[in-house]
Image (cartoon, rainbow, N blue to C red; front, side):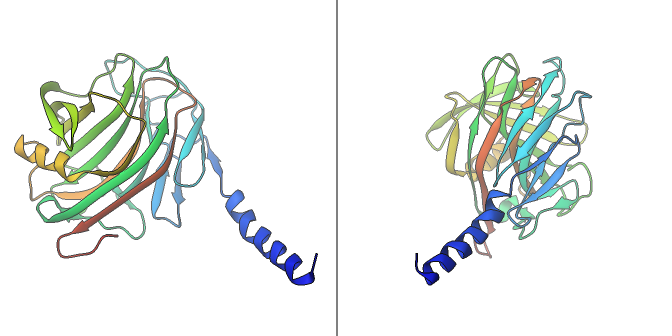
Amino acid sequence: MKRFEWRFVVALAACLIPLMAAAQSTCSPTGMIKLHNGLYNFQMNGNDSSLEECATINGVGFTITTADFRKATNGPPGAYTSIYRGCHWGTCTSSNPFPIQESNLASATSSVSFTQPSGYNNDAAYDIWFNQTSTTSGQPKGAEVMIWLNHQGVIQPFGSRVATAAIDGAQYEVWTGKQSSWNVVSYVASSPVTSVTNLNLLPFFEDAVSRGSLDPSWWLIDVEFGFEIWTGGKGLAMSDFSVTAAARSGSVQ
């Protein structure tokens, strides 16, 4: 091999080694790891169970390697292990397009792929938060918009089923409810999927506004995707998560 070719191989290997070593692991129920130079955050978010959960994080995705939750399905899940962009209870990602008022949203899209082993109770869902003001260090006091792309077992969203809706050619069951200080509106896909590409979030927000669950003056502060887990959990995985959004006076970020 010529000397310049050998130098090229060495240089290429030096570039690839950090990428190959990028995977991280955590078993902390409050574990949070910055991804993609802080553009996204991984959160274990396992505060509702004392049972151990571990995850391996790679790229903008993760795999749950240890989990055997045993939560009652008529109560809260053991965890909502997820990745987000925006501000979650005051912890923000970098290069953050939020907050944006719902009435001023020009675009909001997301992509993700995921895997769900069968035989357990869980959902693969977006959890999207609006606050009545542009920032908050705690529980958002506006609306929680959930989009269940797939779910297993006997679980169902918070609140009551109130309608069905056709959004961008897909059918969803619509559930609404009122928590102590925020509204919840959930969209459950009638035909479950395992991935979405450039899912347009705006029609979901517009539908939520039409139902009185979301006020146009409230601020979109973060978009999350992951798994609410009641039983089991091992083997749940997601990858290739992305979120973009823009205000009408700004550009896509």
